[in-house]
Image 1 (tube, rainbow, N blue to C red):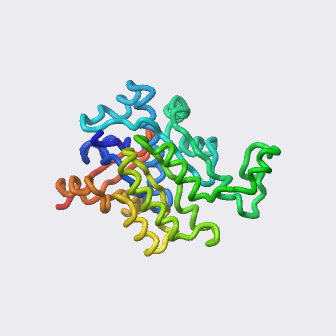
Image 2: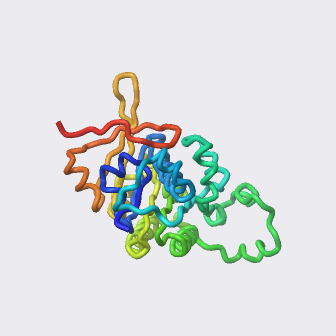
Image 3: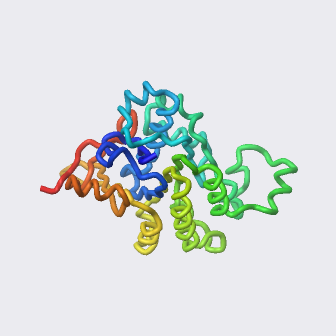
Length: 278
């Protein structure tokens, strides 16, 4: 495997088929500017490639000869359940595309670990009632970072994994998660991902981070794709640009590309225009 497709066809074609395997990529953006839609598209299109090659060809095209689809697709959330994530994805992508592949995407809900030490009632974030076994386990809760690390260790090899989202960890008390620990986990993720050989997409809301926090995350990952709103006259447009991405940024610079304009279609995020240096 020389490349792992992001699932956004025009972007993949410009960078040699996708991401170098073993990469941890930060999807950082303003609210609604496209980072989350990029992640939804990546998970859905790669899943379509596994379950319905004809549909994949229709909505993505031919996969680059240097690229291979990930073996599995995983979606990890700290606060949302599978039905909630499914509903969010269908707000971006046509349900006729999402429904056939939803069972090919493994959803992991870490709400129990995330909310477990908070005063929030358990019934708010756990769908089923507690059993006697649950009560016995409640005295040895895993930390949310430990839970994420264990899940990646078990499932990230040769897979596409979406982590949604590091921004959720900012609101946790320092005694539960210190931000330095988050950055350290991402650094460890980057090191381990070389052996795993897949692709990990990490969502973060840039508006919620300080410059120091954002800089630390960028330094801890292999690449950063930024998503912004740009005002042009009376209209706003979504834009995307690549920062510090090994094996990808040089290809974009060779083409003199400085920015991508994006739009949300029925089959997910797509590039509508490529801006080049004049």
